[in-house]
Image 1 (cartoon, helix red, strand yellow):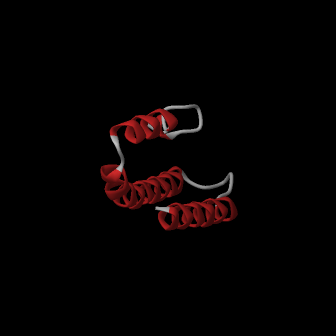
Image 2 (image 1 turned 90 degrees about the vertical axis):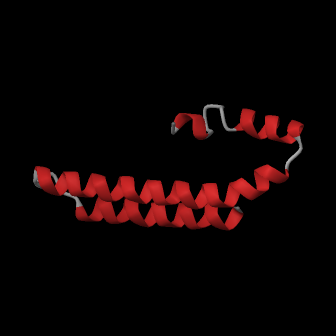
Length: 83
């Protein structure tokens, strides 16, 4: 799971720096939409990688550990903000 998180962070960082470098205030509407689509696709791929890593770990947790994990991801910095 840690590998998936690190890979996602690196991918998102590269995507954001590339978007910042390549974007300009003169970009056309189709260019802006294409960039947004690319970023959303990258987010979806990152979420799928994370889910693939989390599913087997979560299945191995006790009910109490699952409850704790669920509560941790509901906070202000958790996944709840993304959903």
